[in-house]
Image: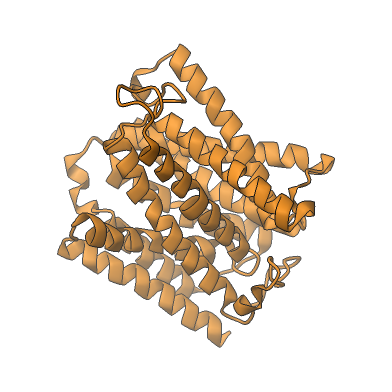
Amino acid sequence: MSLPSGVSARPALPGARIFQGSGQGYAIAIISAMLLAFTAIIIRALTEYYHLPTFVLAFWRAALVALVLLPLLLLVKPQWARLRREQLAFYAIYGLLLALFNSLWTLSVALNGASVATILTYCSVGFTVFLGWVMYSERLSLRQLLVIAISLGGCLLVSNGDSMGNGRFDLLGLLVGMLSGIGYTLYTLGGRVASERGYPVWNTILYVFGFSALYQLLFNAALTAFPLAAFHGMAGDLWFLSHGAQGVQWSGWLLLLTLAAGPTLLGFGLYNISLKTLPLAVANLILSLELVFTAAIAYCLLGESMNPLQLLGSALVMGGVLMLRHKTAEA
């Protein structure tokens, strides 16, 4: 499969020659999915054991990404830390898309439950197929479209889709869930646009998450001042981990920092790098492996097991990616 017009295949980081070759995009995207799989594990710990409000968590996750990345760039590659005037409007809009996606995802979980919300978000593969076709002429073959359909079915099963009938599923929940999928698609598209404009990946990550943190701060302040029933308990004091009855919860702050520097910074960064060589739909499809990796990590660390349908879904998602990789290698 040839690269889309205007997209460079050169490595985004010095010394990244290890990723050169026909499989570089796939390798980077799979590593990204593995890193992102730890996101749900850490967030679960922060919300269940530390009771950290969702929007406070979202703010610190974005803010710490920027705070960790900025000094690293200033030390290693100072030019990547510069914000040019022509980038400002794009990064401000891109950051808003990321903040809105996170907000829609949060509301979707509240309305639909985690399983259905995850399924609806991963329907974004279909949206990326459409946008890739409209904007980049990424015409996928019938076999590739079939692989995407099979993989989406796998996502349904891995997300415990067999229990959908047990949860609340109304028109509003469906709308919000689908909008979260569209938001995820637009974030993916923003990464491609940034790549085509020649913006360094880590420069993009720095300012997109910086702007996202600012918007999340405003969202949290608004919901604290004007609480809504749908967001009950999701907004609160930014220093929640330091002002509780137990005093400063250093282990909670350490988990937040780990979430920002590991799964978020490296996970999203490598995913954006993969967009340099992969079509939108293919990159998004590979990222769906996050569901499989999350289930495996939860089994090893938390003792959670998968039912037969979830195991079948894992096989479908993995098989879809391998089939797509094999087809691309032949092209």
